[in-house]
Image 1 (spheres, helix red, strand yellow):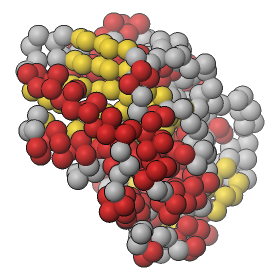
Image 2: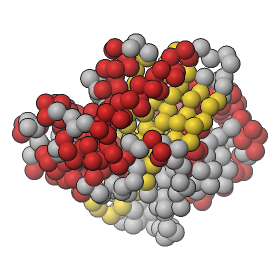
Image 3: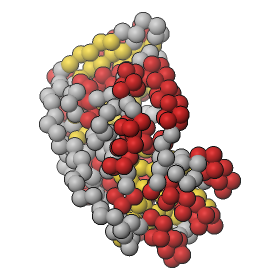
Image 4: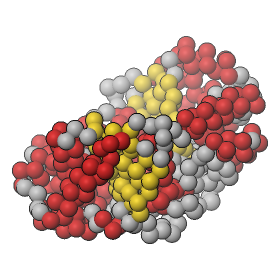
Length: 422
C-alpha cells in the first residue's frame, strides 16, 4: 500500500495553484508567495518557441541575446550592475514558449526592474555579439555531430514526429549561415513584445513589489490575440523503424528506442503508464538498471522516461554502452519489455515504486521556486491540475493486472522506433 504520509495534504495541493492577477496594462501575472525567502524570481513567458521561428536557430539567438543590452543601457553597464547586485538569470525555450527568469534580492528589485523593463522594451542586438554567438553555435553543432547521444536524440525525434513537425526538426551547422541579424531582430519585434508576456512572480513579495512590477512591466499596447501553438499537427505513424548511424571515431554507442504514447495527458492511463515506466527504468532499482547495469555491466546507466509536449507525449529508453555491448544490451531491453507484457509485477515492487514516486513528487514541490517552475512546465505544455489528481489516483489504484494490460498496449515492439548510433 502507498504510504499515506506521502500523499500531499489539501494545503500542499492548493499551494501548487498560483494567484492569478492582471496588471494595469492587461498582462496576466501569476503569484507564488513565500515569506521564508528573501529572493524574488520573476519569469517572462512569451509564445515564441521554435514552432514559430522563421529560420532554425532564431529562437535560441533571441533567447540568449535578450536582456543583455538596450539602446540606452549598453551590455557592459548591464553586466556590471547585475554582477554588483547579484542578479541571476535562467533562459529556457521549447517548441511552444520562451521563458526568461530573473532572480534578485528583494531589496534590489527597485534598482533592477526598471532596467529589465528597458531591456525588454528597447532591446539592442549588436552585430558583433551576434557573430560571436553564431560562431559558438556553429562549433557546438559541429561537435554535436560527433556525439552519439546528440545524434541519437535528433534521429529519434525526427523518426517519431517527422520532418514537418516542430518536434521532429533539429539544427545543423549549415543553418548558422542562413540566419541573419535581421531575422533575429524581426522575430524579437514580432514575438517578444512586453505587452504579450505572461509573468510569474515567486518569493517574498509585498504590495510595494507588486506596484513596482505593475509600473515597470504593464503595457498599454494591445495584447497579441493570435492563437498560440497547440501541437496538434498530424502525427505520422512511426512504428517499427530500426535506424543505424555510424560515427567511426566513437568508442561508445547510444541506444534510444520508444514511441509516441497512444494517450493524452488527461487520460487516467497516462499516470498509470508513468508507474509502469518507473518500474521499467525510472529509478536506480528499476528492472533495466538492475539487469543491464548491475548484472550485465553493459552501461553506467540506462533510463526509461516520458517527455510531454503540447499535443503529444513520447516514451523512450536511452543508454550509452560500449560498442561491443550494443546488440546484447538491445536484446536485454526487449527481454525486459516482454516480461512486463507477459507477467504481472509483484505487489511488493508495485508498492515500492508508488511510494518512491509519491516521495519524489513531494521533493519536486519543496520550495516556492520549484512550485513556480512546475507551474511553468504545465503552462508550457498546456496541462492543468487534473494531471496531479489523476497522478495520485493512479498511485492509489494501480494493480499488477492493470500495469500488465498497459504494457501489452504500449510496449509493442511493432510500434517502437529503434535508434543505434556509434
